[in-house]
Length: 68
Image (cartoon, rainbow, N blue to C red; front, top):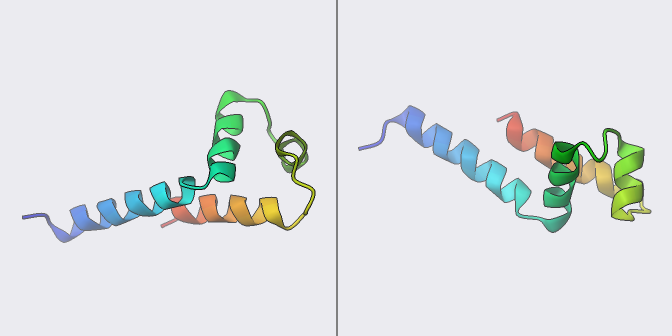
């Protein structure tokens, strides 16, 4: 049987996978990992995002899944 700590790890992993399950968020992580972009302006331009509230929302969702 799994311990409570193991379940917490599974829940954290599931939360991260849920955050990455959105195509824009997956693209954000890919661009950051490849070093293609290192700031919000670059990400907005490379993703073609014109609404200045959209990208911060996606970044917050990614960040909050890592902070669990």
